[in-house]
Image (cartoon, rainbow, N blue to C red):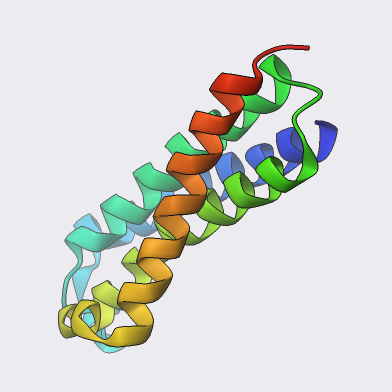
Length: 125
């Protein structure tokens, strides 16, 4: 799945770029306060999660090149949305109690975990 690998590379690049946000978090935390960040530790989480999710997509895309499109879409959706869910938490930790957030978190987790399970079952062509 060439497009799965490509999205994995984009996620990996995004995770790498978010390393600069880690520098800001450590060296200029007042910048984050200025834009409304109240939970700066979430920056590390989104940074690391995008790196990990990118590596997952690259690995699955290369290991299972004939992955059915429906499984690939679910997996990509989950790996894109899961890390992003740390972003609103950086600005308002209470957001995790909102219905839309909980639904999105569950759906993205199902996409990731279900997609990985399905990829493992399908296996390499």
